Image (cartoon, helix red, strand yellow):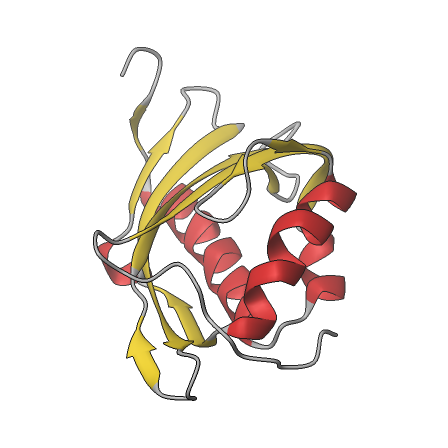
Length: 152
């Protein structure tokens, strides 16, 4: 990948902390807290939504449609790969995740997948902001889940 290199320990740790924090917010269906991690002009797509641009659309068209319907979400950061730009102001995390889906009769089923998350910051001293996400379910995993947890 031209222009990208393996990250240093400190950059990998800062990306992992960001991903772990977001993981907890997804698991808690805390859209309010998760919102602060992302740029206003974020672009995203996933299994549920086509390309969306803008934080409000991401929350309405993707997050609020999926997060309340799943349980036990967690990113698998111990297996995560992180690529960091030479200026250390852009990072790409490639990470698997697990969750539980709920079928129409209320039975739980494994709902694994993977994600690519692009983070940017103006300087190394700044916090990361999410600028792009792509989520996809694992092969053969049912897309529909029927949970109804409350959004925070």
